[in-house]
Length: 305
Image (cartoon, rainbow, N blue to C red):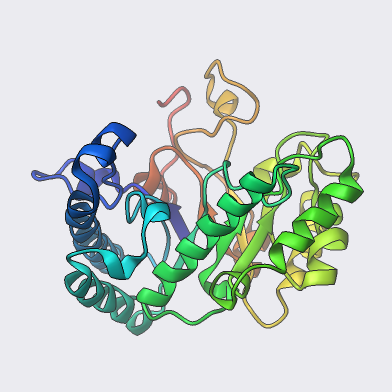
């Protein structure tokens, strides 16, 4: 099945807009604090339910949620929120909708989540971030399995890949089951960073953490493997859980002046073998519109932006 990430552009244009990423700047957090964070969290969970309902109504059963679901959650426990009971009630409704319709629901924390950092503070903050995502999935009532994944990158090598991998493994071992059992790791988009075979050897085999295959990234870290070979190697790390793969096309393909890593607005040709072997997250800038256009069989115009 196909999925999309975070923002639903169609619902974002509604009045009022529906979105689940309401946040606030540090200055606002310091002035308005827990009460406002709680208010925003209620709105985010309520809109998440409507987004999930829209997805199901449009036969979309794979969705990556924003990591801004509960603003400033690193500064408090969920149960401290004044509206916690209301948030928990809406979250239970969301979880029931997810389970009843077999929706695959995932997270992808930001690039600031660096479990292999040389900084102890950065590692501690990263662990905290993953624990927060795990607590949200628990609040939704979803099983602790990579079917409902929390996906990360190693994202750096710190001039010593072996030591970096060791730090990553040590950090993973510090995670609680809520985060640890849902963790996945993805190949990177720079030649010197982490490829599928490197992640398989350094992470998947010793830790049983599945590898998410990013099709677009593989061109930068192929290590001599074809796209299909890279995917099949990653797929073997998922054991009894259906793999996740990411698919996007370069913006340059549509005539845009952009970095090779930049994603296009739409996609035109997801390989059949990828669709057969994995649930595919489309990382296209046009979000659900790209998914619907691809599924309807219409081709994006060259130069579309």
